[in-house]
Image (tube, rainbow, N blue to C red):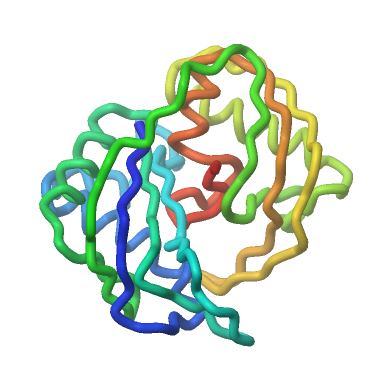
Length: 229
């Protein structure tokens, strides 16, 4: 399940290190509002015996925000998406967001103007997925991969299969990268993250395609990376 939260920013500028750097803290705090034990379990140990955390979130996306060098500009017309393919996690997030009138995003306060489910049609076995935020993937020697690097597509398939295993879904998958954005580098807790947004044709079980829309592609989804438009 995916949900979209309409927000208005109290400030005009958000330092870049907070765009993705606090996303996971926002998620854990929301879960703690309604399900503190679930929040702690997910934070400390992942989900279902796996270190993966099946929650996706987008960074705040603002319409009509002016551009400025080296800072992330905000406005009164913004949106944040949350999602999870696990019903219990999705329900806890929805309940928490629905009772909030504000979200604290690092130093910025986002006023909540409304919350609604983001419903899409049931996918078939193949879908073209485009990401709102950069996709993180790693190869040998723990090095971040970018579209066009050797092993990128296979690393993305491996990530999708690990997600399928956590969810108990068939893991057969094929990926064709159709388009990629520029290299991006972000500071988050624990270091730097490097990736690029992408558009890819993914062929897999329809249930897994639905799960990916609520979870995201690649690594670091709970930090706001790999969120699907």
